[in-house]
Length: 89
Image (cartoon, rainbow, N blue to C red; front, top):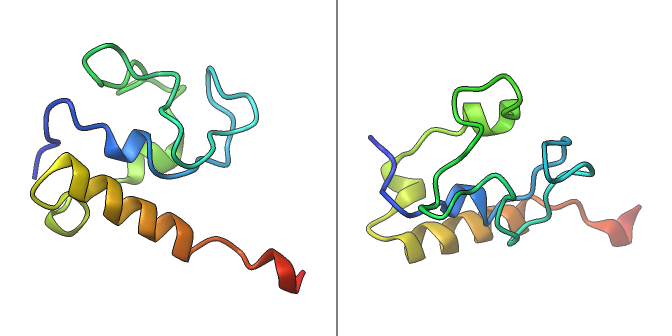
């Protein structure tokens, strides 16, 4: 499966815990990555500075759904459901 043009849901919905250019402390969930260009493409794609988590995330029917909005919802749900429960720490 190929990425949907002008989607970038995977560059917006999830958090990134590792530093990357433009996000020295990682990227919070729901915040567009500073590396997205005006066409919602990654400026780091294929470069060594691209975080491993980004390189390992591959498009799939389940993740991408039928629209950008579906992908944002699914990834947002996944982000929320995998957050540690800070009340038990």
